[in-house]
Length: 194
Ligand code: IMP
Image (cartoon, rainbow, N blue to C red):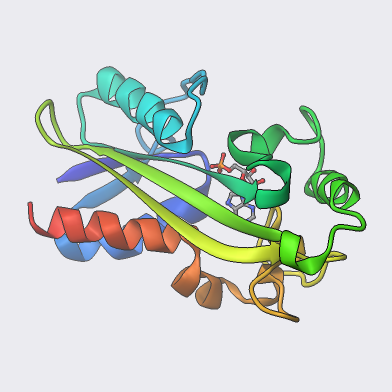
């Protein structure tokens, strides 16, 4: 069964392809289907934003679809940047600028107050009757400075233990523990029972 992975990120499509093909699905990207939709992500939660994307792509294609939304929540900042993670330092800013802004906000904040978590919501619509929403997280804390050259986004300032940042793990290691991997495991469990 063909299933659209509603993301422009080819890395995410590859991850889904590896996991879903053994279950008999044929994951395809938006690009494969020639879809170039600009969707307003104006929900208030990761789950709502994933739902908005999934609903729109399902409406356009009539095909099964999986959409995701993810970001970083910092406890000391009341959950910011949260759903605004991609735009935290304004439109067009770089990962480095976003990381620096967050480090500036956290300057002088003691270790016990630096807790953070990555969140990934996945919304899957198989047809008009069967829909699934799952959420995966990864707990850690915000470091004092960027470390490591793998990954993307906030990985260099996200510490998974006392001295390792997420950007110090290679792709395979990150994929074993990430918020996205945890959400995918939950979705796969649901789809296995289909
Ligand atoms: P999106 O869900 O792909 O739109 O991601 C939203 C934003 O959250 C990204 O632009 C990153 O800034 C951040 N983000 C999401 N997942 C990760 C991750 O695994 N590592 C680092 N940053 C992430």
